[in-house]
Image (cartoon, rainbow, N blue to C red):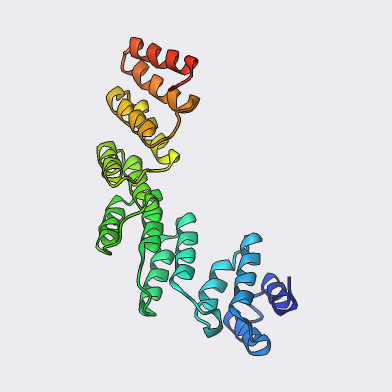
Length: 243
C-alpha cells in the first residue's frame, strides 16, 4: 500500500459520521495528495478486499472526482456490486447518475442489469432491458444471451430459454456450460425427457463433453418420465465413455 492512499484507507476504516463528513474527508485527501486514477482504484480495491461497509459510498463519491477519470465501466462495476447485494434501487440510481453525466449504456452494463433483475425475480424489467440491448445494434455475446436465458429458467419459462439458446446457435454463439446445465437441470426436475434430450444434444453440438453430472441429469429426466429403457441406454453410454 503506497503512502498516497494508505492514510486515506486508515481514515475510512476509523471513520465516524459523528465526527466528520465522508465527502469532506475525501475532498481533503484530494486537495493534499492530488491523487491519480490508480490511487483511487487502489483505495477501492482495498475497501472491497476488506468488505468495508462504506465501499459503495466511497465509490459513488470518488467517481465524481475529476482525478478519478470515470468511465462507463466504473459505473457498471458499481451497478454489478449493488446487484449482487439485491440493492436494486441503488443500482438504478447509479444508472441514472451515469446517464446524467452523458455516459451511454453499453452491452456490458445492460447485461449486469439483466443479471440483477434475474436474481431478483423481476422478469419484466429483465425482458425490457434485453430488448433495449438489442436496439444497440451490436451483436449480442454469450454473456448477454446467457443472462437472459438464466432469467427465463428462474422464471420457469423453459421454452423461452431454449428458444434463445437456439437463436444463439443459429448465430454460431454457444452458451457456457453452466447455462446448458441449468436448463438441462430444469427439464430434468420436471421429468421433461424430450426437453432434456434436446438440451443434451445442444451441449454436444456446442463442443462440450458431457460429464457424469450432465449425464445424471438426463438419466433423471428419463426416470421421472417413466422411460427406464432410455435411462439405461444413457447409463450404458456413460459407462462406455461418451462419444
